[in-house]
Length: 256
Length: 269
Ligand SMILES: Nc1ncnc2c1ncn2[C@@H]1O[C@H](COP(=O)(O)OP(=O)(O)O)[C@@H](O)[C@H]1O
Ligand SMILES: [Mg+2]
Image (cartoon, rainbow over all chains, first blue to last red; front, side, top):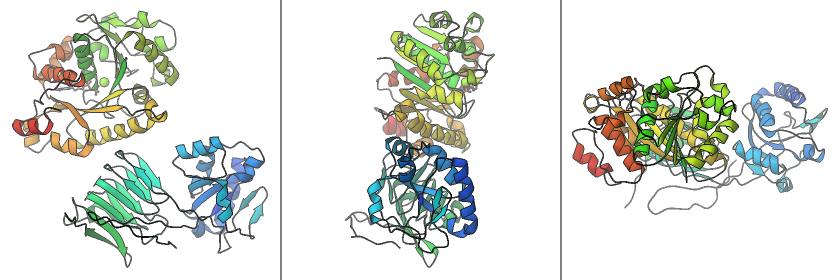
């Protein structure tokens, strides 16, 4: 599902940057009535709970904005999250909605994103709300190449960072912090918190860090907790990747 | 330009109020007009540490509710006429503080004072949030033990994401580490984290280390900030901290017998 782009090699550090393309379902909203939305969403999910479980989702606001409805993005995202879906972007939002969305750490995609959308004619209309049919094996797709998220300050206990693509952190990640990426994770300092790469199932995702002291590491749902990390891999630069569904932790050897 | 300093920690009982009183007094003693505000509504004790508890008429909440003017509520310190105390209310709860009200009082204080020291309550709830929200500088008070360090880290996250400066995309709050109740003997025994350990976990600029000291208890019993006890180790440590904050170079003291090592590591910064 991921499409690798040109590899860049750094002479001193054995790292790798990738651009990936993801398929993400889009939820087209047609009402500002959040309780109605909540109800119908629940109904939809009941039809295919496995399909929807922790599914990433882009919210399309074009229809409601065209109708002049006013929705609070925070509340809207709350409703969708409560239903067990993970909002990874909004599309066709207005200035205020985009601002609210970014404050929630949710990326904003422009309406032009629709150009590359593979329209799905099997949309099931339920009253006001159009949802993607879970029975259709081919959900509407939005193709976006997600930019890398760069964080230059320490990620402190209690903070959570989500990146829709790769995540590069130039400072330490404290115990009690959580960094999550759909792509790769790079930490150019000490990693003490929880790091989850490839959270949408990308088996190719990797975690790189300068000093492994993590509470938890996970790639595409395969995880190890601190207790599982032996002394041989702790406190040094490592890369972590999946091989035959097993997490491999390997030293990064720096060439000087 | 006036500066708002928050003394914060997340965890309770680590020495925030002791520190607020000491540094406010230290700044005032060095000629800067300073106000110190008790944000611990319902659990006030800054007035006790400052020895002005018997002169409290109006408090912070009265000023916020415009039941008293700032001048009516500010208590001039008995030892230093450049230092004023704004006590907390003992009879209200933390909901009596509003962000708008706190902002208004701080703006008014900024017209007249060089430094405004905000003594934060414990926790990360409303009172602690309001104490740090308007800050320019943060003194993060930490004890050398794991839970205190963790709470400080959490508070640092809040400072960098939930403060006014963060929300308005301004330059971030200057964060300083104050390691208090430090006991080199217990570090040696492995009962406490070392300065180095704490620095490693928090990666924060160390403003100073305050030793565990009986002088702190004596000072609070007599209602005089410990910094006025110039012979005491804790008093000297706080004086160093004030000097460093004001831009002076002072070698770190009271760390342990590996003094030379730490001098090399932290000295002259
Ligand atoms: N350096 C120190 N040495 C010994 N005791 C201290 C020291 N700093 C603070 N204390 C004591 O710790 C207790 C809590 O201090 P306080 O300043 O009230 O903490 P906080 O405001 O963070 O709750 C008080 O009893 C105080 O006397
Ligand atoms: Mg206190």
